[in-house]
Length: 281
Ligand SMILES: NC(=O)c1ccc[n+]([C@@H]2O[C@H](COP(=O)([O-])OP(=O)(O)OC[C@H]3O[C@@H](n4cnc5c(N)ncnc54)[C@H](OP(=O)(O)O)[C@@H]3O)[C@@H](O)[C@H]2O)c1
Image (cartoon, rainbow, N blue to C red; front, side, top):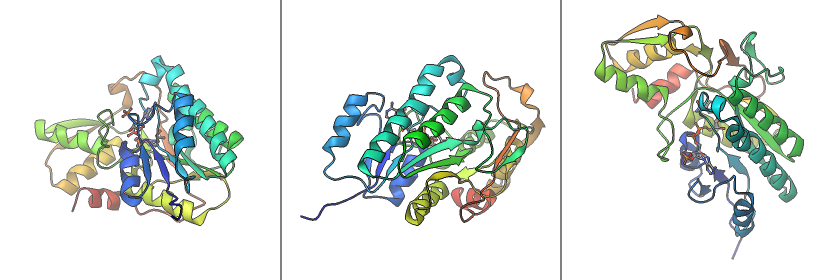
């Protein structure tokens, strides 16, 4: 029988993983219940048991609790840095391309807009762990792609722990309140998980040189802009009040303005269009 070669998606039940599985229905999908990726020998045994080498490994596993990482930096580094470093080694040994995701939080926000080649200077333990992960993937990888992205929204991942996106939180708040407050002095790129999954597939098909790529929807938004657009599209009358980030003190410091410029790949559609698509209008 001919070998069936499939993409292997790690973190398949998360927000992005779920969208990748829609694009690659044949993919081998692993999540925490299939293998704890921090258990290196269990992971290696699973990898060795694959009936054939995957066409590519796409790693969506991450420690994404930005504030929690301040208290548990060891866990954040284990999942966001050491594990992708080991995975990069395995994929290099086997000659399999690796896609790994990082974040705009590797930047400090002082410059505002960042090219792929700009030097990271993370402000938080989460940002430092993701930056270290980027470095280890580059150091150990063969054909490797670090895809930086930001503020993912889309259908919630199947996993119980998968975070609700900002869109769901805003819609829940609108059902309870007439007025909400949203932070206006933190500006990010914004990314629809389905578009990021499609961008990932396009990247793997184009197979450019190994390196760091920025994949987000076009444009940028503060949380205030984002909330207003959600309510505009869904026709909610909820009033959104702009507030400074100091209104909601949080453990981890966030960049004030960290917009990812995509200078390498075909641009994705504007985030407002993607949001309207997601919200079904
Ligand atoms: N979400 C954002 O706004 C955002 C912004 C910038 C960058 N990113 C990056 O984009 C990528 C995808 O993010 P996402 O939002 O799709 O993540 P997510 O929804 O949190 O999904 C991560 C998945 O990995 C699984 N996982 C966690 N620890 C594991 C372990 N030890 N072994 C096996 N599986 C484990 C999780 O399972 P459990 O649920 O059971 O833990 C979950 O299904 C990540 O690299 C993230 O850092 C995300």
